[in-house]
Length: 507
Picture 1 (cartoon, rainbow, N blue to C red):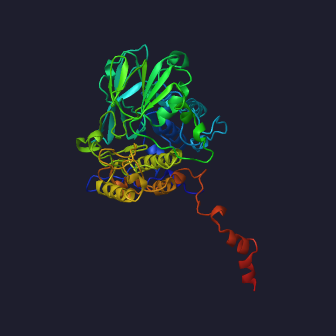
Picture 2: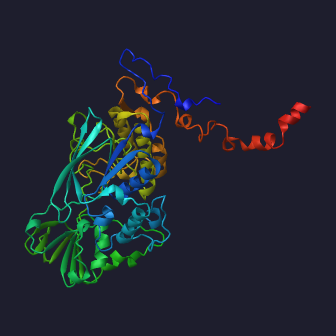
């Protein structure tokens, strides 16, 4: 009868070492060794992706997701203004694990995208990880425990406000970048007696029937303004569009030219375009910087988002460093994923990320896999904390800024990719999306400072020398290195199938 080594414990009676170290009786890289808790902030595109990936690829991981809104979707739940849509082909805006053959449009609108995300959550039963109507008050790193303490506030309709705390081993910051909308700083905006609406918080009860016959002012000329105007123009009495900075339209294959919905709309008699900023707002009118006053019923602020990357709540890491303060002058990250002084922390679509290269979904999937690798490493090696080195991060950002000097992003053209006061480009990765995916495909753990739960010896995760296969002899493949898949086809054809070595021996 073969010896059952799975029941042996060679070191069960070993004495403690001089430093108090004793080898723990654990199985190498067995998820059962350590229960890991992951907390994700946000149930938008990134949060949904991580719900799926952790469910599919991880064992013994507790995953909780907190979302400030009443449902999933993030930006696609919040942005329901007329004409809201993605800016890439619909088929490029899908998860690689859940392709959608049934998009109704080349560039789908926000409602269709939300329905797609909703279906993903339904098919894979992902809502069970999510708690809605819950805002983050603050996140605080505890060096002794190697955990984050997250303070939350829940405001379910019909229930009393509830404040509570959660602890987690890994904090995933999936709030997105284009979701913290920004009101324009215009004198008198708070004194306006009509409706004041931001495109990113479009009221459900303000639709065609409600704006019919109104005079409307749209402040802004970016993407949300361009999408909003054609949807409102046929139904309102008059629209005044205020363009502080003129925009460029780039010709594309199949472009509609002057038949483009926006170009058509601004030529209609009930639309006036004012190439000037708004100077002041009264109780019932808008006054531009040239002194022209227009009476309006509603003001639509298509004025974009706070793109400073600074979180809207405290995230306090090592040595009491607040991420908002750290990023006040210059938001910098390690490969758009992790941040010095913020251990056990991953951000999605952070500073220096390939937002400028088309759909975010491809690179986002690689960030998801990066997070999964980090989870498994922390779990399998009993890692207490892992944080990128400051000097390595500084050098990466120095490389990025040098790269940007030779690109169009270094010009004075206004965009949310750059700080329009300092001119520094904060959002752009120094390469293509494919380049980014290959760069982060395998984590460079040498760029991190790592501490371990076992204070005596970081090799404690090796345990007593047994693998999962050693512990399960009846079902395990004990010689995984011998299989046909790794056999070179040329050797198979020339030697194995023809019996060449046998023939050589018989000569």
